Amino acid sequence: MSVWKICLLFFCAFFGGTSVFFFKGDNHKTLKLVLSFSGAYLFGITVLHLIPDAYHGNDNWVGVFILAGFLFQIILEQFSDGIEHGHMHKPKHDLAIFPVGIMISLCLHAFLEGMPLAQGNQNQLVYGIALHHIPAAFALATVLLTNKQSKQNTILFVALFAVMAPAGYFFSTALSNGNIGNLQHYFNRIMGVVIGIFLHISTTILFESSSDHRFNLRKMIAVLLGVAIALAGFVGEL
Image (cartoon, helix red, strand yellow):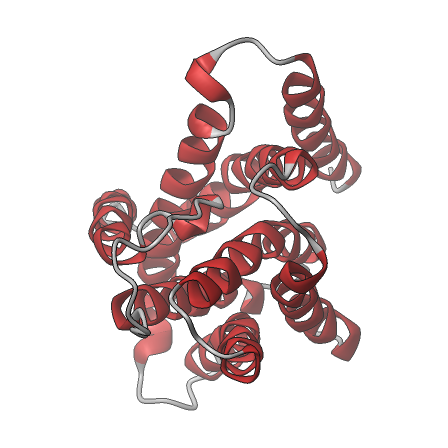
C-alpha cells in the first residue's frame, strides 16, 4: 500500500479527533452526514468487493466467520458504548477516570478494519475507513475530554487510535505473505471476521444516524451518494 494511503488513514482519524477542540456544543450535523455517507459507502464496498473476494477461495466456512465477526462487534460495543457509530456519551460521574474499555475496544476495532487492506488494490476501502474514522475519533476525543482527561492525553490517545488501522494493514500483510507462521492459509476466514464487523458497523450507522428514524432528505442524499460511489468504483473495475 502506498505511503499516502497510510498517511490518509492516520491523519483523517487524527484530525477528526483533534478537531474536537474547535467545535462547541453537542449538535454536529455535518459529522452526522459524514457518518451516514461513510456507513453507506462501507456497506457498498463490503457487499460488492470484500464478500466476493472472501468466497473466491471456495471456503464454505467463511460465512461462519462472517457471523462470528458480526457477533464479536456486538460484544465490543458493550465496552466502547457505540463510539464506532459516532455516539458521544456524557460521564455519569465527576471524577477523572480513563475509559479503558472504550479505548481498548475501539483500538481493536480500528486494527481489524485495517486488515482487509492487504488484499490487493483497496483504494475504495481506504477512503471508506478514513471517512468512518473521522466521526469515530471525534467521539473518542469527546469522551476523553468529558472524562476529564487533559488536552495532551487526549491528543496522545487519539494518535494511538489513528495508528491502529495502518498497524492492522501491516500485520495482515505479514500474515498473507507468510511472514508470521502459516496463517496465510486462513486469510479469507480472518477477512470473514472483518466483513462481519463491517456489516454490523455500517448497518447500525444507517439505522441510527437519524433522530427517531424520521425521514431526513440530507441523510438520504448522503447515503445514496455513498452507495453510488461504491457502485461506480465496482463497475469501473469490471
